[in-house]
Length: 362
Length: 118
Image (spheres, rainbow over the protein chains, first blue to last red):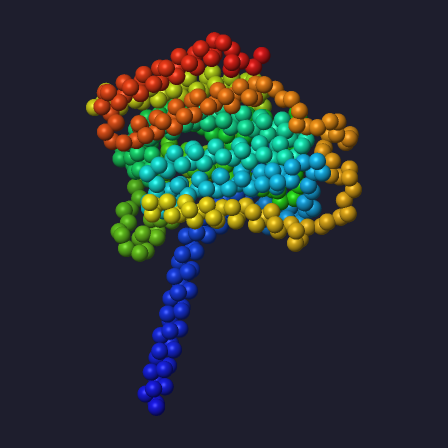
């Protein structure tokens, strides 16, 4: 009998272990899914805080300072406030389009984070057509903006939605040949391979030096895609009240901000990946020790990779934020002319130049 | 195909992330008894005149029509750019011919003033 109870206990403890194993398995499944979501949320809060602080610095103000040290919690407080606000639905609008518009903008941009490598093998989905996935998914966002502009049944919103759609689709065209010439150079459209191809010659192997025209066109068009200030025609405060978000209140209004900052972050991450060498530090005269493939070294190397990627991305973010607070806005016809008559021929020429170099170097 | 599994998971996660905030205000938000002026379209404090979905500028339409031509062009160029055996002269020159036709088309459109905004 005694042996039996011991066996029973052993079986019990074993089964408890088994169930624990199941729990651990579930947790290990959930961690890679929810870590990026958490990271992206924190990233947005940081960008909002940075934008407020930098704009305050540009205008010689102090900026947020009471919520937490240096006002770090200000963005969180604003988001919570937006959650508690009344959710107004315009009486004559199309409620379905009105409610779904901001969500579609967020969904499409959130999906494109799955192909961004933050470190060596630290990417959610290493697709062989990673960059192409970003380009195709990013063109869904203007549909959401158009839906919300049409659904609010407001003249300002309608015009803002139209402008947003026209602007995004016109600047997508110069953007794509630049990405195409990058994937020509690195012989692959996987984001990991693009970074690997830049790591050969250190600092001077960055695509920035091999594709200076493409870099300039890419930066300008990604600023226009994000509707940042030289190109923020869709929500021009002085002409259209707030563009497509005029009728929105509460968290739906907040979702538009989330979408625009997500878009800014993803664009700067792609600038980093495509042109600035991704997770490789590759600065001359600074050598990182090569980490052995054991646990601690691997984790340390990974952390450094994430840190370098984010540092480069936030450098680009700083540039675009200061651009927003220093440059005046363009007119709509200037904007479309810049896209169609200047950037498109230049980017196509850049693509042809890259092709011929590739052809003659063989 | 297994490399697309994270994308499929994210196709579920990202709608959740963006749709849950839409449902949350029903629990927390203040809901005053609304009066009709509050729900009308904003037109600088006046009653909205007419419907917003009326005629709009044809040039927005033109832009989207012009967009349809270069977008498939670039989409078709991606398979040409990526595979390793692409840089035989035949492939390159046929791509050049393809791009040349499109350049002629966009030059024609430029000269006819389709991309002019007054």
